[in-house]
Structure formats: C-alpha cells, structure tokens
Amino acid sequence: MTANPVARVYTDLADARRVGRYPPGPTSFSLPRTHRLSHDPLPPLLRWYAEYGPIFTVRVLHAPQVFMLGPAANHYVTVSHAEGFGWRDGAFKDLVPLLGDALLTTDGAYHDRARRIMMPAFHRERIEAMVDTMTEEAEGALARWREGTVVDVYGWSRRLAMRIAMRTLLGLDPDETGKGAEAAEQFERALSFYGRDFALWLLRGPGSPWHKMHTARRRLDEIVLAEIRRRRAGGAGSGHDVLSMLVDAEDEDGSRLSDREIRDQLTTLLFAGHDTSTSTITFLTYELARNPEVIAGLREEAKRVLGGRAPSTVELAGGLPQLEMAVDETLRLYPPAWIGPRRALRDFEFQGHEVRAGSYVAYCSWASHRLPDVWEEPDAFIPERFSRERKAHLPKGAYVPFGGGSRICIGKRLGQSMVKVVAALLLQRVQLRLSPGYAMDIRQMPTLSPRAGLPMMVESKATD
Ligand code: HEM
Image 1 (cartoon, protein in one colour):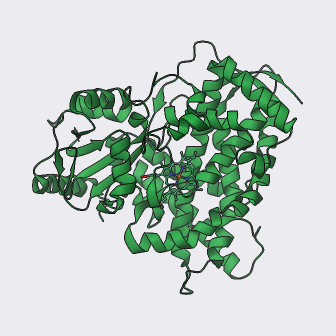
Image 2 (cartoon, protein in one colour):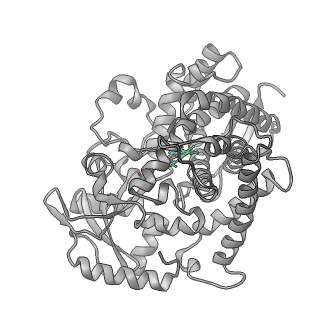
Image 3 (cartoon, rainbow, N blue to C red):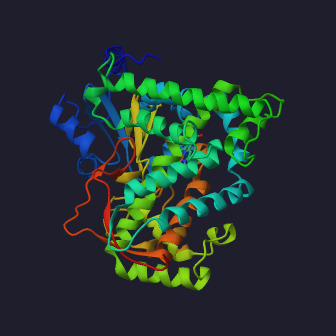
C-alpha cells in the first residue's frame, strides 16, 4: 500500500479507467465541487439524492466515488451484502500510516480474528469497571467550571474524553508527565494531520504536516510499546484497562496478539472512540441549549432517577429513557463517523444500477439521517421519534450512527455509556447558555465537529 499521494492519484486514475462505467451523477472534473464536498457535503449530497436517487457517482478531485444513501443502501452495504465490500482499500486506507493494521483498516480472516479476541474487552462487565473512571473524570472536569465564565464545551469534552481514554484504554495516568499526558498530546498532534486540507497532505519533508504526523506517531508508539512490554513483564497495571486485557487475550487456538498488533488496535481504538464521543457530547449540549422544553424534561428525569448522583450501569441500560432518546436524536442529526468508505470487491447491481468491482463506494449516515422521504422534519431535534414504539417502526437501515452488521462499532456500548454519564452529570451540575451570536459551522474531517468549538456561558452551578 502506497502512502505517496502522487502514486495514489495515478493508481486511482488507472483503476477508474479499468472500472470504466459508473452509476450516473456529476462525474466531470470540478475543483469547486470537490471543495464543497470537503467543506460542506450535506447539501450537495441531499440534492444529488433528489436528482439521481439512492445511488449516484460524484467525482471527488480525480476519483469517481459511488454514494449509496437511504435505508436500503445502508442495509445493503453494512448487512446483507457486506462481504462484497472491503474496508482496507477504501478511503480508510489514508489512515493506515497512523493506525496500522487494525479493525478499521483490515478485512477478512485477519480482521475477524482480531475482533474475536477483542470483543470481551467491550462486554458489559468490562464497561462497568470503566463507568467509575468516567464518573470520576467528569465530576473533576465539571468542578473546574466557574459561574459567569465562558467555556468551550467542545475543547472541554475533548480533554475529558482523552483523559478517560488514557485511563480506560491504556491504563495510563493522564496527569503523569512523560506518559499519559504525553501520549495524549502526541496522539492529538498525529490526528490533526487528518483535519487538514487534502492539498496539505501532499507535502513531504521536514516541517510538513506529514512529517509532524510521523514524528508524533513514533513517540506515541514508543510510549504504547513500552507499556505493552511492561505489562508482559508482569508490571503493575490497572488490570481493568483494555491494554491489559489485550495482552492477556487468547484466540480459541491459544494464539495471542503480538506487540505490534496490540499497538495498532489501541491506536485505532483511540482514534475511533475519542473524536466520536467528544462530538456526541458537544452536539447534544448544543441541541439541549436550543430546546428548553427537552432539557427541562431531561433535568426532571435526572433528578427523579439519580437525585444528584451519576448513573449506575443498570440505569445506563434503559433507566433514563428521555436521555437515551436525546442521545439517539443527536446521533441522527450529527453522526460523528458520518461516512462509511468501502471498495467494491465484486460487481453488483443496486436498484437497477450496475457497480463494478474496484469502485470506491460509500454509505453515508449523515445524509441518510436527513432524507425528507424517510424522516419527518429531518432537520429538527425531536427526541420522541426514538421512543420505543416509534423506533420499532423505523425502516431497516434507516438509522446507522454505529454502522451495522458484523462490523458494527465495537465500542458502541462504551461510547454511549460515556456520553450518558457526562450528560447526566452536566444536566445536574450546571446550566449553560449559548454565546450570543454563535452560529454552528460543522467540520467533517476526520469526524463531525464544530469548526470553531462550542463556546457557552456557565449560568449557574448546582454545587461548587
Ligand atoms: C458515540 C460514539 C461512537 C460512534 C458514533 C461510533 C461510530 C462508529 C461507526 C459508524 C462505525 C462503523 C464505520 C463503518 O461502517 O465504516 C464504527 C466502527 C468502529 N468503532 Fe465506533 N463509534 C463510537 C465510539 C467508539 C468507541 C468508544 C470505540 C472504542 C473505544 C469505537 C471503536 C470502533 C472500532 C474499532 C470500529 C471498527 C469495527 C470493525 O470494523 O470491526 N467506537 N464506529
């Protein structure tokens, strides 16, 4: 696999020539269209859906990209025909230099073995142990807020999510300089590469974003690999973190993950879990500030069920239905992992259109969650649409914030728990107000997030 962008463009062009025929759509070369798609893709995707239907092709920079939108398309790609699509050679391949060979970037037997070995780390009992850490960290972070000050809820959630990830995934103390704090900093530094414009990805040499990403990744690797070796040598770890679990885990045949495999999987978990949870907390806080009747209902529920404390794992699994609906609705409007990039491994036909092996194909939860023929008032924040009865009537594949099928998000329960713990405490500890004149502008790389953060005024605190 090449990391050289020029070679990548050349291979893509050769592949597109080989594929030859694509479903209809705007396939001429266009820089303005490429720019729009990489800065504000939702409006054009919805327009093309109205014009071409649930499958169409768009040329993004040099490469034709087949989009498949809507319930049937999502179900087709993630569940009923998932084996006809590869992750490795889809757009996630850009992540290989940072993530290595792990769940998001591999296919077939290699992926399935790793997923089998890793699954127990995400079982309910394991998450129970992590909920205490989430609560402790969220309480600490909220205690630092002062009435009358403005906080950037996005930056705050990001730091909080990173501290929780350092402890629950790597078992590192986020306050310990040289370890937890540095690992977090290096990871953020490496990740920032993917938030930059594609043109900057092309630069190489000292000082370039690519070079900085590799320098940060190397330092992060040193920390993580040293920690793996320490655990293997029987050094003290928290025992409850995912790293410890992966060091001890065995497949049915007794085989274990190598140091390199554990490193790749852990970096992937940091990548997949950190931004996504951060964004969900941020967008939920934003929508609640804009919907006073919803937040009033959530406060009443939190007071009645929790009476000021954090939720237990039992309460997190169904004991706070209003909060759950609000989180579901947030993930409908702003699914952080908004696009599911794939490569067609074989020819297929979808709704009368032929797609040939080798085509770049993507399903898109963000656009699918805003289709006017599927969702009433698609842009409005209406948590009741996720009441138990109404949820049961959603078409198959309509709602896919965690993907679907056998490769559905492995951290779904962990991410949901974290969002709900933080939200339940936030609701009970503080009143926030949007800064006057604030306008949400969404950035979508590498995940959905507010481009300029989310500044909010701390109006009052329940405890100080
Ligand atoms: C609100 C939080 C989260 C959201 C919305 C989310 C969303 C998603 C989505 C949409 C996918 C599938 C992508 C595709 O089909 O191409 C996915 C996969 C994945 N997620 Fe999450 N995620 C969240 C939290 C987490 C957490 C906390 C972790 C781990 C710590 C995690 C780890 C993963 C991994 C490893 C995969 C790949 C699974 C595989 O292919 O086998 N996610 N996530």
